[in-house]
Length: 226
Image (cartoon, rainbow, N blue to C red; front, top):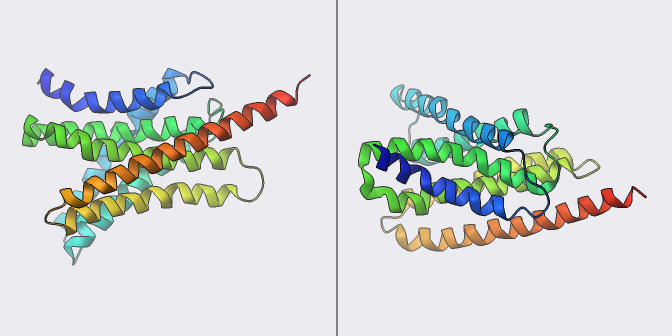
């Protein structure tokens, strides 16, 4: 059991450490980051329950809706909602890059519990592919969501609500694309590998842009003081 838990948690810790160590501006309070991780972990259970109820009641007429559309929408919406309620107006949300850290924390909390449950059912044989695909994809969805969340918080003017919506829409589109590839392709490895490479490229581009926004944010704030 200890080995299984270690294997299930290790990918999330590695991914989070990578994005955390790229923060060039301030050390985020470990308490809030841990809370975000816990929020994401706790989210796993109501999401799985909702999915089970809808499946048990036969709500969906098409397998595509059940296996692709609904999971993508429910998972990304609840992660976005947690970030809006618990993090967006928090005093420790201090610069645009913080959005990436908090978004990744919530997503990795969810991915970690989901990974533990999956490995408990199917065994350690699936650990490598789980780390490469579901865990890392959840983390990257969170990075993209967090980028737009951070940009929304520190963008003056009427664009804030649009950017908040973009935080949800962008991660949802990526999640839908990922699930669609796995569902519609019998030889999905030929499609999912290029998609994962694109997802890493796109997410790291958002990380770079968030760094630039944070640099501008700190420069503007510093210039206001003598």
